[in-house]
View 1 (cartoon, rainbow, N blue to C red):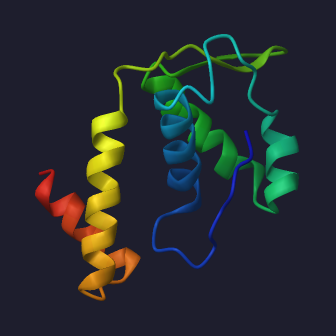
View 2: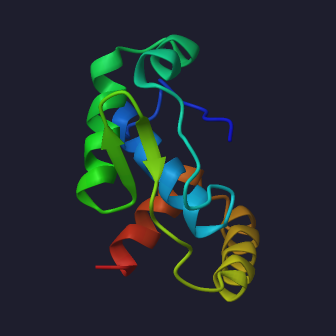
View 3: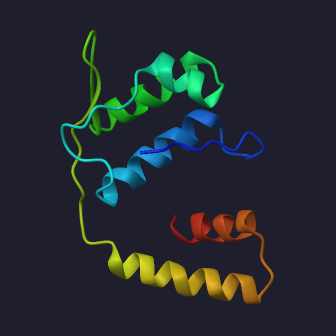
Length: 117
């Protein structure tokens, strides 16, 4: 899986990594038993501090999505929870409506976050 970071985003870098792994697991792009890149390797590839990657990995470990072992690295332990096709279809409609209303991606995301509370 390729990780992408947006340094200009309001979302902290570690949260961007956490979100990408969560989505990767939910969509089946990351599967149980798959090894994630070593923290130092990922930090170098994304040009970020290794402690940022480690913080993301710790959050994922605390959520039960990965297992961290010295010498083994980070291994995916989470499994997809449900079929996301209905959610993805609804998101497609939401994005279409947001573009028609000329909402920015950040404004759209803020509306979604508020609605989920």
